[in-house]
Amino acid sequence: MEDTICAISTPIGVGGISIIRVSGNESIEIVNSIFKGKDLEKSESHTINYGHIVENGEIIDEVLVSIMRKPRTYTTEDVVEINLHGGIATTNKVLKILLDKGCRLAEPGEFTKRAFLNGRIDLLKAEAVQDVINSENEFARKLSVGQLSGKLSQIVRELKNELIGLEANIEVNIDYPEYEDIEEMTIVKIRDKLADLSSLLENMIKEANTGKIIKNGIDVAIIGRPNVGKSSLLNALLEEEKAIVTDVEGTTRDIVEGKMILNGIAINFIDTAGIRETLDVVEKIGVEKSIKKILEVDLVILVLNGNEELTKEDENLLEKVRDRRHIVFVNKNDLPKLIDLDSGICAVYGNTKDLNGLDALKREIVDLFNVENIDKKDFTYISNARELSLIEKVKVSLDKALSSLDDGVPVDLIAIDLRTAREHLGELLGETFDEELIDELFKRFCLGK
Ligand SMILES: Nc1nc2c(ncn2[C@@H]2O[C@H](COP(=O)(O)OP(=O)(O)OP(=O)(O)O)[C@@H](O)[C@H]2O)c(=O)[nH]1
Ligand SMILES: [Mg+2]
Image (tube, rainbow, N blue to C red; front, top):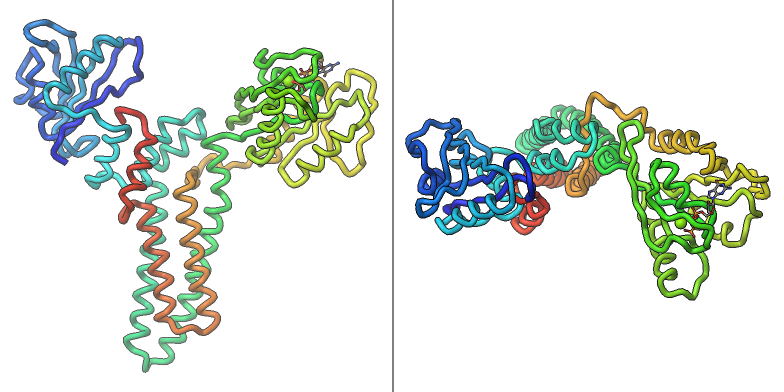
């Protein structure tokens, strides 16, 4: 990793300050060559230095330059951060000068990638860095900062150590097969331990959904026939005129989204086009999108018009959402009730005119996802797909080992499953990794991080 990289680390636009970050062996030398002030090559580590960025004698900007010498830096390399007056032209100009002087433009996430490749942080912590940035609510922030501080890494390391211990036990068994009583004892011990670890993993997998909810919120699609009041419901829930409402059937053609926070969790409401048979090309695409949404979201709110009798289309929709997590909302209860629902259908009644029933609807959402019982102290949930799929693989290997033990398979064969499980834990931490996967992962990062 010889090249010195640079990038704008603050959002591009007008603001109080912009920060350009530089990392690599030549970072101090390069910045010093365009800096007028004291000699940065002589300045102490972790100092902030006042001066000017100059090019051909022209002052480009008045700046503060942070010097952080390796190894106690974000990337473990020499890192320089230039604090400029904010603004697009100045920031771009200084970036261009740095590139002319021999820096390479960093790829998204490349600073964090270097921190990982240089061994300062494991992969779980690296993933947490971007999660901290993406946190949109207090719970998500706590979750990601916990992972960044190493809570999840520690659990994974402990699991790994347990497996190493078990493998050692098995080695003893293989090396001294003549001690039958030892063998019996170790098998019982190994079995108990494996069962413990498996249930721990099962818990982690079960709670992963909570992690996902904390991090990404709950996606809720509002579905129904045209004119039942879906857009009105979206607006009422968000307390904002987000979607167009008219008495014309087929008003909403495309997806309209809006977010609210319920008990600290983000709820992403998605208003959709009313579902009906139609020959209109544009509306047809909208209807297809609505139907697709039913399968994509965490929750469907099926809206019915309480002022009309149930139609064939309503019945079709009830059928469509039956196997999905859903709530039936019977709207327009400010008007006479004409709907007659099957007693088996549990529904929330209300309307979007005087907002009757909306609190009950929100309550139902909170209850369905058990939002109030989310453990607000612990926050060591797995929250991303890569991590979850590896934890699932670990559990599969351990369960295989367990059932092999019960079937009387020789312990040395069981050791193979334990090793596989341990390797997956290593992948989780990034001890072994596939380069392409790592590239993909860091590409999702912000520029300059
Ligand atoms: N009386 C009454 N009218 C309502 C209520 N909710 C919506 N409406 C009216 O119903 C009509 C349709 O409302 P929208 O919210 O546009 O219905 P939609 O389901 O989004 O319709 P599409 O976008 O066409 O699928 C409008 O005239 C609303 O004012 C309600 O609770 N009570
Ligand atoms: Mg609508």
